Length: 560
Image (tube, rainbow, N blue to C red):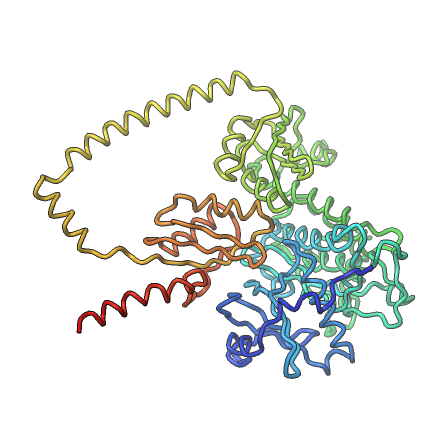
């Protein structure tokens, strides 16, 4: 039984070397963006694939494992797709070159931003949660008969797109474990990066999912402390971040290793939850959590921080007397509420991306303190002390363009009021339309002028249809449908074609503005949108061109 697709199954992803060379200007120095364990990485622009990152294999860096790592990464990334795993565009294997082509992530790798003061604490939490979800997908959700060990989890292998969404990359060392095999591998030579590698795995050569958990725990501490896992210039405990933080955590001295610009932004409960799960990841193998547990704890840390951000400064920072009473310290949540209201909604969510879209549209909304989504049951639970069910209902309909049904509480009176208000709005709109029609009648041109206008319009040739190609992340058909819906009836748009496999959206129209379309999709769909270069010969128009040219030639001959 196959555990992963072979290289023969992905021949459709092959990209000619000439195309890659053109995209990178012949692997020019100005296109060089970094050096990885695989080899040099270049940035390029391809007519077919848009902005790309090109990894060129260098055999001397691969310890004789170049072919195996090359094939492993292609086979894995071509089969298993997730919003928090880097997207493989294709590969090249010709003329002695072995090249991997990815979607270019504009913000680079996480290690470049660890000490970035502009990267807020809440942004760092979201990045960690994204990466944890990607790793959990590899461990548990790639299929009922397969689990994947990454083996090289580290901040340089976590890429960030323009919206700071994190994506796991570099799967050359990954191993797949079928369900009928034991939960560990005996490896002859442990692979990994110093500072991140699991000590248990390094000592006894047994590889498990908990080895990835340890490496991810080191990444969590990197994000919290704003520094790399291993700094060889230090001659004391600071050289290894894992050793350094374990001592400070055990002594209750985390304040001394957290940058002040981050510490000022943190909620106490958020920091406590985050540091606790990060510390558990570094424990002995049997005591470490699973990635599913890590995801849950990080979500809790985010919920505490979001609630802290929403509160006024007077409530967020209690007086000395209140601290002495211990009211805040005993409450595990930063926003205690004895009369918290709970609203249950029914919303169709095709995938995790759809659920995240619903959460995003309610983030920071009036009275909303927590949002829990469940794609399997298609339910959303909204919690808050002063949350209005009707406003929440309208908010989701307006922002996510989805059908929403209120399951609880029952609000027949409120819904009747909503219908009455809508009928009043319709009456007001009818009045405005009547007034507008009168103004239009007054503005109509005279009989002679109208004929002149018509004559001038008839003389002008109809504008030729324009085709705009966008690169939009679409995780499923539900996401694609949302893109089509947001452009339906938009200024000048006549047709929209989406393709989830290539992540492309083709917009056609005679008077369509590319920039307005770009802004529209970004505003409504909250997804990364990239305007690709115009296609010189649209595929759909190619077969029609010879038919259009024939009558022109006959007409030209008839002049003589």
